[in-house]
Image (cartoon, rainbow, N blue to C red):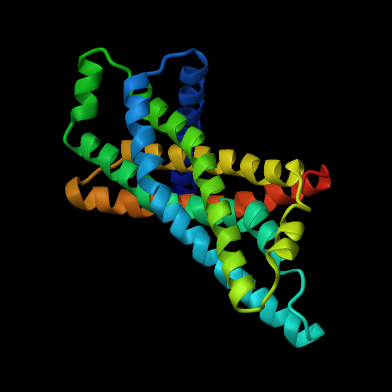
Length: 254
């Protein structure tokens, strides 16, 4: 038991040190912009369709469940637009999009770095005088922070549109009524969701980079590191979401 606790604390310390080095390198301007842009294309552009699809059907099922629930209680499908808008922008858009991107881009990122580790490419970087954190972690960290908020915005818009389709054709709610409820949300609500998204982006980049850099044991080790990274990122996203929501609500944001 003591050994397990010591190992866990050691991993937390190493992961924290990696995060510190990455953030420090970002603020010192040690950024490989070509590599960063390549990562933005991989993480952002290639994930747009996935984020939109996820958001679209999430909005549709939100509208369906909300409309049916209120119709059974009040005999009228009311507040569908309000429920879809607030649910997507405050919670489901940021959380579900982050989890989906963690499963796609985060897993690929861990596998790529892990393969570099087990094939001794990272050791070769040290030999060539290149700092692996600046070459590997910083571009991916920036790419996640920049692209994930845009993916969440696309998912939110798709979710609101999906809710509109269900509202129009399933419940006969006029577009003007649906849009009126959507526009009741303000900038604090949008800021609430995007601020959480920035934190989720840092979590995915941090966890994926760390698990890739500590990979051992060849191909099997890469698979285990990838699984561990995705699961850890998802758990941290859900945990952080609760505490950030509580903090932002107490501050009157969202």
